[in-house]
Image (tube, rainbow, N blue to C red; front, side):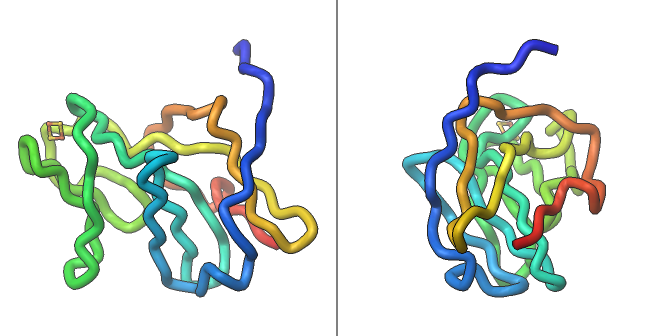
Length: 120
Ligand code: FES
């Protein structure tokens, strides 16, 4: 597949993202999720149904779409339709203690795999 040129943008320092946390980056339209083991994944906040912005429900540990009630688990996998697939992901890297995201190379996926997590 053809991918756009990588342009990594700094999201913050690695220690800003505690294990178990979900951090919204509204302007960049993504959530940075830190798994319990410290692994990081960046998911698009756009619902895979018709593109509404999903919000993080901290109590239920779910992403919820306000438009047609799709929901997604913490790693962005579909819990409730009509969303047809997991939330899209962005490449991440950790360099010099900083977490960086490549906003030009969003990709689709069927579901979550541990190989999608990146570590410092
Ligand atoms: Fe999210 Fe329809 S746009 S459920």
